[in-house]
Image (cartoon, rainbow, N blue to C red; front, side):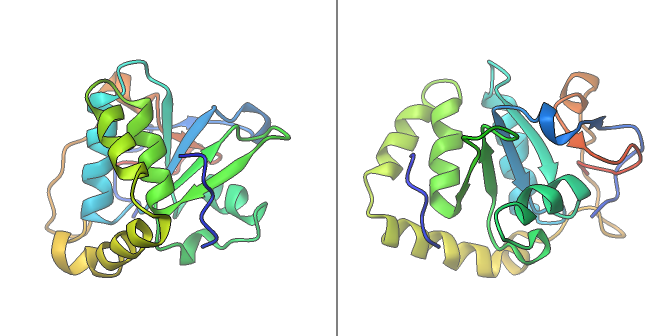
Length: 174
Protein backbone atom coordinates (compact mmCIF):
# COMPACT_ATOMS: atom_id res chain seq x y z
CA UNK A 1 0.00 0.00 0.00
CA UNK A 2 2.97 2.30 0.50
CA UNK A 3 3.86 1.82 -3.17
CA UNK A 4 3.78 5.07 -5.08
CA UNK A 5 3.09 3.89 -8.61
CA UNK A 6 5.01 5.94 -11.16
CA UNK A 7 2.36 6.48 -12.83
CA UNK A 8 -18.85 19.85 -9.88
CA UNK A 9 -19.55 21.88 -7.59
CA UNK A 10 -23.32 21.64 -7.12
CA UNK A 11 -23.94 21.01 -3.44
CA UNK A 12 -25.49 23.12 -0.74
CA UNK A 13 -23.27 26.00 0.43
CA UNK A 14 -21.64 25.69 3.80
CA UNK A 15 -20.87 21.97 3.52
CA UNK A 16 -17.11 22.29 3.93
CA UNK A 17 -14.48 23.25 6.46
CA UNK A 18 -11.81 25.73 5.39
CA UNK A 19 -8.22 24.71 6.05
CA UNK A 20 -4.74 26.01 5.41
CA UNK A 21 -1.94 23.88 4.02
CA UNK A 22 -0.36 23.51 7.47
CA UNK A 23 -3.62 22.06 8.83
CA UNK A 24 -4.02 19.18 6.40
CA UNK A 25 -5.14 15.84 7.84
CA UNK A 26 -3.07 12.67 7.83
CA UNK A 27 -5.27 11.22 5.04
CA UNK A 28 -6.92 13.48 2.48
CA UNK A 29 -8.85 11.77 -0.31
CA UNK A 30 -9.10 13.91 -3.44
CA UNK A 31 -11.86 12.73 -5.77
CA UNK A 32 -13.51 13.74 -9.04
CA UNK A 33 -16.47 15.77 -7.80
CA UNK A 34 -18.70 15.03 -10.78
CA UNK A 35 -17.92 11.33 -11.24
CA UNK A 36 -20.70 8.95 -10.22
CA UNK A 37 -18.23 6.19 -9.31
CA UNK A 38 -16.05 8.57 -7.28
CA UNK A 39 -19.15 9.85 -5.48
CA UNK A 40 -20.08 6.27 -4.59
CA UNK A 41 -16.51 5.57 -3.40
CA UNK A 42 -16.61 8.63 -1.13
CA UNK A 43 -19.99 7.56 0.29
CA UNK A 44 -18.58 4.04 0.78
CA UNK A 45 -15.51 5.42 2.58
CA UNK A 46 -17.67 7.61 4.81
CA UNK A 47 -19.78 4.61 5.79
CA UNK A 48 -16.80 2.33 6.59
CA UNK A 49 -14.40 4.91 8.08
CA UNK A 50 -15.57 4.40 11.64
CA UNK A 51 -12.40 5.93 13.11
CA UNK A 52 -12.93 9.03 10.96
CA UNK A 53 -9.36 8.98 9.64
CA UNK A 54 -10.17 10.23 6.15
CA UNK A 55 -11.02 13.74 5.06
CA UNK A 56 -12.26 14.60 1.57
CA UNK A 57 -11.98 17.31 -1.09
CA UNK A 58 -12.88 17.40 -4.80
CA UNK A 59 -10.15 17.51 -7.43
CA UNK A 60 -11.99 20.49 -8.93
CA UNK A 61 -11.36 22.61 -5.82
CA UNK A 62 -8.61 25.01 -4.85
CA UNK A 63 -7.28 22.73 -2.11
CA UNK A 64 -6.68 19.89 -4.59
CA UNK A 65 -5.08 22.28 -7.08
CA UNK A 66 -2.67 23.52 -4.40
CA UNK A 67 -1.84 20.04 -3.10
CA UNK A 68 -1.29 18.54 -6.55
CA UNK A 69 0.77 21.52 -7.77
CA UNK A 70 3.27 20.82 -4.96
CA UNK A 71 3.80 17.44 -6.62
CA UNK A 72 4.05 18.77 -10.16
CA UNK A 73 0.59 17.56 -11.14
CA UNK A 74 -2.52 19.26 -12.49
CA UNK A 75 -5.56 18.34 -10.39
CA UNK A 76 -7.89 19.12 -13.31
CA UNK A 77 -6.12 16.53 -15.48
CA UNK A 78 -6.15 13.73 -12.90
CA UNK A 79 -7.78 10.48 -14.03
CA UNK A 80 -7.39 8.99 -10.57
CA UNK A 81 -8.59 9.23 -7.04
CA UNK A 82 -5.69 10.69 -5.05
CA UNK A 83 -4.76 10.01 -1.45
CA UNK A 84 -2.56 12.67 0.08
CA UNK A 85 -0.81 11.18 3.11
CA UNK A 86 0.80 13.33 5.82
CA UNK A 87 -0.19 16.50 3.97
CA UNK A 88 1.63 19.67 4.89
CA UNK A 89 4.58 17.80 6.43
CA UNK A 90 8.02 16.89 5.17
CA UNK A 91 6.72 13.32 4.76
CA UNK A 92 3.86 14.36 2.47
CA UNK A 93 3.28 11.87 -0.32
CA UNK A 94 0.69 11.19 -3.00
CA UNK A 95 -0.81 7.80 -3.76
CA UNK A 96 -2.56 7.35 -7.09
CA UNK A 97 -4.66 4.76 -8.87
CA UNK A 98 -4.88 1.35 -7.19
CA UNK A 99 -2.32 2.33 -4.52
CA UNK A 100 -4.71 5.04 -3.29
CA UNK A 101 -7.67 2.63 -3.25
CA UNK A 102 -5.66 -0.03 -1.38
CA UNK A 103 -4.50 2.48 1.23
CA UNK A 104 -8.05 3.79 1.73
CA UNK A 105 -9.41 0.25 2.14
CA UNK A 106 -6.73 -0.53 4.73
CA UNK A 107 -7.85 2.46 6.83
CA UNK A 108 -11.52 1.41 6.92
CA UNK A 109 -13.35 -0.90 9.33
CA UNK A 110 -13.21 -4.67 8.94
CA UNK A 111 -13.50 -6.49 6.59
CA UNK A 112 -12.27 -3.76 4.20
CA UNK A 113 -8.58 -3.98 5.25
CA UNK A 114 -8.66 -7.63 4.16
CA UNK A 115 -9.94 -6.59 0.76
CA UNK A 116 -7.15 -4.00 0.63
CA UNK A 117 -4.56 -6.65 1.43
CA UNK A 118 -5.94 -8.89 -1.32
CA UNK A 119 -5.77 -6.06 -3.86
CA UNK A 120 -2.25 -5.20 -2.70
CA UNK A 121 -1.16 -8.74 -3.65
CA UNK A 122 -1.84 -8.01 -7.32
CA UNK A 123 1.11 -6.71 -9.31
CA UNK A 124 0.94 -2.91 -9.47
CA UNK A 125 0.91 -2.89 -13.26
CA UNK A 126 -2.09 -5.23 -13.35
CA UNK A 127 -4.11 -3.39 -10.72
CA UNK A 128 -3.29 0.00 -12.27
CA UNK A 129 -4.27 -1.33 -15.71
CA UNK A 130 -7.66 -2.38 -14.30
CA UNK A 131 -8.00 0.91 -12.48
CA UNK A 132 -7.19 2.83 -15.67
CA UNK A 133 -9.72 0.85 -17.69
CA UNK A 134 -12.48 1.76 -15.24
CA UNK A 135 -11.26 5.37 -14.87
CA UNK A 136 -11.31 5.99 -18.63
CA UNK A 137 -14.91 4.78 -18.86
CA UNK A 138 -16.26 5.98 -15.50
CA UNK A 139 -18.58 8.70 -16.82
CA UNK A 140 -20.07 6.41 -19.45
CA UNK A 141 -20.56 3.50 -17.04
CA UNK A 142 -21.39 5.28 -13.77
CA UNK A 143 -22.60 8.66 -14.98
CA UNK A 144 -22.07 12.00 -13.34
CA UNK A 145 -23.51 13.67 -10.26
CA UNK A 146 -24.45 17.23 -9.58
CA UNK A 147 -25.42 17.98 -13.13
CA UNK A 148 -28.87 19.25 -14.04
CA UNK A 149 -31.46 16.54 -13.47
CA UNK A 150 -29.24 14.43 -11.21
CA UNK A 151 -30.42 13.73 -7.70
CA UNK A 152 -28.02 12.78 -4.95
CA UNK A 153 -27.88 12.66 -1.18
CA UNK A 154 -26.42 15.58 0.73
CA UNK A 155 -23.97 14.68 3.48
CA UNK A 156 -25.16 14.68 7.08
CA UNK A 157 -23.99 17.45 9.38
CA UNK A 158 -21.37 15.09 10.84
CA UNK A 159 -20.14 14.11 7.37
CA UNK A 160 -19.93 17.75 6.23
CA UNK A 161 -17.17 18.42 8.73
CA UNK A 162 -15.02 15.84 6.91
CA UNK A 163 -14.96 17.80 3.63
CA UNK A 164 -12.19 20.36 3.33
CA UNK A 165 -11.75 23.49 1.27
CA UNK A 166 -9.47 26.49 1.09
CA UNK A 167 -12.42 28.56 -0.10
CA UNK A 168 -15.30 29.23 2.27
CA UNK A 169 -17.87 29.02 -0.53
CA UNK A 170 -16.55 25.98 -2.40
CA UNK A 171 -19.04 23.13 -2.69
CA UNK A 172 -17.74 19.66 -2.03
CA UNK A 173 -20.12 16.72 -2.06
CA UNK A 174 -23.17 16.45 -4.21
